[in-house]
Image 1 (tube, rainbow, N blue to C red):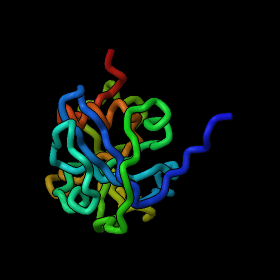
Image 2 (image 1 turned 135 degrees about the horizontal axis):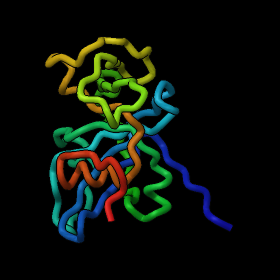
Image 3 (image 1 turned 30 degrees about the horizontal axis):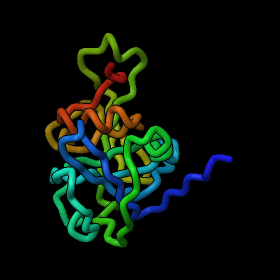
Amino acid sequence: MAKRIVTKIGYVFCVEIDNKYKCFFQYVANDMTQLNSSVIRVFKKHYPMDYEPDIEEIVKDDIYFCAHTILKLGILDNVWYKVGKSKNLGEPDKIMFRLFSEGDFSKMTKSYNWYVWQINKEHIRIGELTGKYRHYNLGWVFPYHSIICKIKTDKFAIRELD
């Protein structure tokens, strides 16, 4: 029988990148407004492969980005694994997301239908994306391969890379 996967807010996870370095992220909230997905904050610092995690040191690092994802799938596919837990969640109530809503965005050159929101708060339509909102995190629910791609390249993958 398969073991049940339990994830709790505060858990810190490790991602090993190309067997070269480790990065860490923390599960900080569930966003009911975005498919009840897990919200993570990914830390900037890269650690050597032999680094033994000091959880409180890790969670004091600068935040690289925040994202919505499905933790269970990354665990099942051995993409990331839990290394500890911290009560220090930063300030999840101040995390801001942005998202546009269009029909066929593959043909879109510019959207005038952007929304912004905080975790578990109502989405606010802002129309055109202005400089004031450009630094907000993208609010889609990203598959784990997109999270890994963003850590490695600073860009989210649209589809899984071969």
